[in-house]
Amino acid sequence: MMKDIGHNTHVEGLVFSRNSRNSKTHGFGIFAYIGIPNCIYAFKKSDFCEAFARATHIRLLFHNFLWVRQMGLEEYRKKRDFKKTDETKGYKKLKGGNIYGIQKHQTRHLHYDLRLEMNGVLKSWAIPKTPPTEIGIKRLAVQVEDHPIDYSSFEGIIPEGEYGAGTVEIWDKGKYILKEKNEDKLIFEIRGNKLKGDYCLVRFKGKKNWLFFKKK
Ligand SMILES: [Mn+2]
Image (cartoon, rainbow, N blue to C red; front, side, top):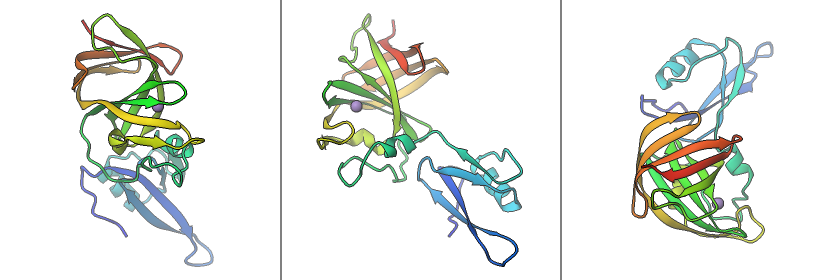
């Protein structure tokens, strides 16, 4: 069930499952999940795997069978019961393209969720106050779990008792252009309806706390 894997195909998961074709050795059935974000990569060194890894830019790190957990949507999925919420499971293959968005999320505590598409997911920060449209206002932005790309178009009601229960509406949307990026700092131009111009996210305390502000 291998699909054609071009250079631009976003291969996000690879699962080898054991099956015993003969009694002494284990065969490995290979299933490539294309466009499913954040599965677990599992490799066994073989010519096939090397070719596959080359074609998909996945690096083989070890010679033996191993599992490498990718940063991703496990946390997003773990928190949600998709039988009860209309939020996306995030299995769709999507192209996206520098998506920027802010969702107003009315839960027990009103906040604004900033989304920036990066590496096949939406990096996400919860901002407890109105996002800054002017220079000189700095907002706390708490990094939260990555969200699927199609979450950016989600509006609706998350039922009572579910994670994030309340209403979600799109507050701003558009594109962004990344200008500078390191571990602790992102500078990017936002091209939205409400936010426009150069913005900065700077980590300031602990791992999850960032400051979000418009740049001079
Ligand atoms: Mn939220």
